[in-house]
Length: 358
Image 1 (cartoon, rainbow, N blue to C red):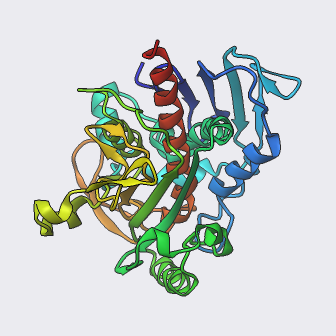
Image 2: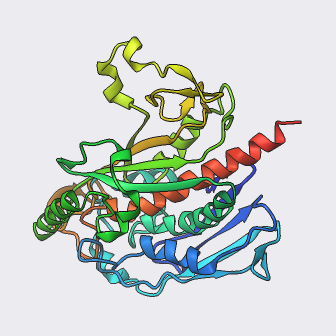
Image 3: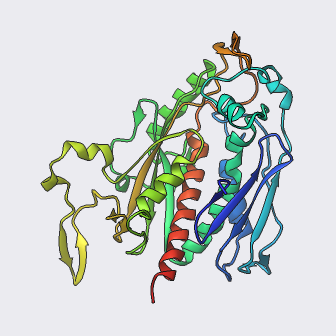
């Protein structure tokens, strides 16, 4: 059950980083949605390895093969099964890690919990598992587009380099103009140079992905334990390397007084509106019609290509020098994953809302 995500719209994923492939089954997807295969593959291409000099050099085509649930280009309402075959594993790169616990990885906890672990690239704990999320999220995006709901994420911080202005002050259509996926081209260049420098040192760096959801209708979210912002937080914190989530003004709002933080209502040509959006598009756990925006902090990748102290499976002190192909920064490839998880959450809550209305 814990390999599944969602309520009415439900994704169950399977596969390991160095296994035969990564796939999933999507249940509850609406019937009649036209499936743009080129769009789905384009979303996967944004996540795949080897796309630039600042990502892992692992070469995978990551071509998705749909097995069921689509007929004559449209969803049938039946379970959608799909798989992406692994083609470029270098499992021998992990031979020296078989008897060791890598710092800040899931090696130790998996071994204690299950009594067995796949040391090749982390197995199930590998970020390659997110392939299933991106495929499913692409389908969710296609459905949401028909409802006028659009989701865009972008890199807003890498290490100490961050965007200082509000997201509305940037052209979010330009995030694909650089490999960092940042809408500020000058900052993007600085970020790219920092990532390259860190990579050359054999180290890694973290940062922040910001996500904006436009066109979300009023009323998505359920009291008390089905709040929309809580569901988005759950979705984001399930992504590998995610360390923190905040929506609206988040921690920045702690510097303000209540009179400054409140989103004051006014009559906007016959429509109730708010003059500000400190709440991030959600109040009382329910969407209020404003843009939903949130940020997800990602830690530096745990695998560093330098010698570190650790212990082996018998608890004996030793050292580890990792080998293989690893991302020096997850941010560029995390952007489409954040979008995917947001799309799955919003579509799921849209379907829930339809079942709770007469």
